[in-house]
Length: 506
Image (cartoon, rainbow, N blue to C red; front, side, top):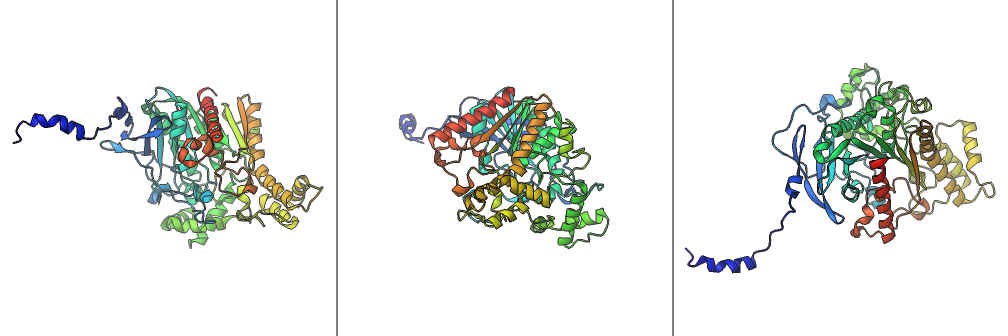
């Protein structure tokens, strides 16, 4: 027994470190009650305040075993207790780009979490204090339908959520053959299950977002590249239209020549993949799918790119199929018929949409030099950039994009091929999509992003490449540790305000 213990109390109070006190209500903000049970997130600093991040919330049953290639199934039963939602989920199995190992401009797009088929999870960022009936932004990542993950650093939702007082959601969805292999007519592999993953996540948002302070009647779907094409496909798909109210398409549209394939081509690619992994491609569909399910995800990914019908750039092996269900007809036909949801649309492109893709096979292009392109290389690049064009169409492209004052100029040839690939795959499809939406009476807003970030790792000749507006939309320049300039921080603030205003009022 210590005599006169009270005498020690002032001394103890002096030497014990002060315990940080959570702001009133902050602890309560860490828990949200979903229909499947409570989830506990974590409190993160964001700008001059905080957000609560709920990471890795399941929205579907794991698509394992016999569920591979099949549509996602909603969660069957609630979980017990409070589920931890403080860490990002696994990324869906996908191709990992190794063209330039260790190069930050490339590695920023590669998955930063373990790969798994158990990957159908979503994330929610909520500003603090938790709002009531805040507008909601739902992000769909790009990646050519063969890659992508909601956990990438460039998709950190905390800054946009806090700056604009919005609830922000992102989801994983299946990609590559696991998300888009299709043998139409077979319930074992009906195709478009990656799009159905996205739709189920949107249904989850409708059912649960009030628990996070969001308004289910004010949901804006936004995405980039294949994510933007996905947004457009949900606009075209009757079963998706009621799940959101505004749409943002960044550098992609569903009518892009790379974004969908026909039922016949989807079947050819599925059977070619089966052949390449040693499955009997001549059997019935159930036997083919059973064999494909016996192969590891990596086995499938290793052979995916071999199914493309010809050498090309800006073409991807497994993409959405015009299945007569999710897509009643081709996006071009649906757009021209006005068969899509009439809602406010924000759509735009970056200055140099084609440059990123030219390093993937176009003759003469590399990140490690100036990519000065000869006339012969330019002509070969046109054939790769517009692979479905016949001779007359290819000649018309050459005629249109050549600077005939000096057709041998290597810089002009490089810039022309950038324009060919960018216009054909992004600029023209996005422009046409916006035009058709406006013709139907929808409010349409357009942008051109032409700022090259001071931190960009890619060479100067690539200009403002595909995908490099995203960091400004998500507020990365507001992080001092990333060494953006003050003017870039201001630009990011402005873009977040544009996106936020659109989400609130259209």
